[in-house]
Image 1: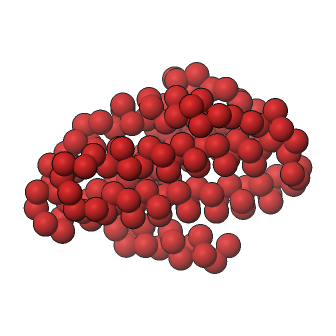
Image 2 (image 1 turned 60 degrees about the vertical axis):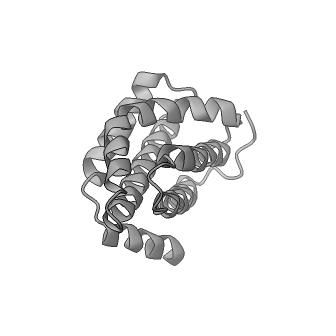
Length: 160
């Protein structure tokens, strides 16, 4: 456990939103790459891991990147079919890149929102099922995001 910089819950929520949106936009950018033989999961997992570490530190909890990756793993496993589909779609120039960026950003957004919601409930070391449940709750809202919505996320992040 590390010392929390502030106990102002509203300030923590604003900073968490900035961290999550930055990671979501970065994941979308990473997945926009057009190469079908480079798995998006390999590009977005480090971004998601860094997001988890940042959110934990924001909330006063010290977590290693290895432990953070253990929280990312179940989500990537759950989304493997969708990620594989968008990799195949990259064979169609343009379409696959847009789809990949959208899916990666929505997954990262949902993971960040889910993990932050667990931290707000003082669940510092969630079990796999808790992570998936929190992720799925937010995924239901975020899975219909369009590419334009992803671009709007970047504007929201910069407005904070």
